Length: 148
Image (cartoon, rainbow, N blue to C red):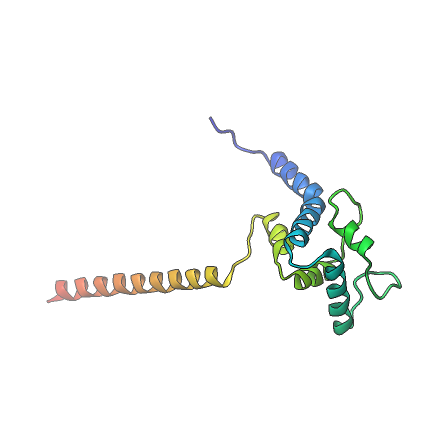
């Protein structure tokens, strides 16, 4: 037997998701770094090079670059230090992954659409349009037959 969740249950689920989000994001970044073809030192170098080219700092302090210890804190789910949004974006470019964004979206019940997913969605939309047009044509044909 299923019981209906109350508003308080939904609030508790949201609170729980929010409380665990930082660790979820950082764990996904940690896994992405481990799966990357680059060492952590290379990831730091790539992130610093990208941020320099973009003319944007990755931290709020005076430092123009991030260090390996900073990256390690950002990737450690147990650390309280959360990477800034800009740093997550640059990290994804440096590692060639969307894993942190997928974790972020997944925490909200959403997902990332790949180019293949988009093609499948577009195909389904076209097929539905064709089916609707065919149904309308059959309806009109039936009306015309009834009028004759």
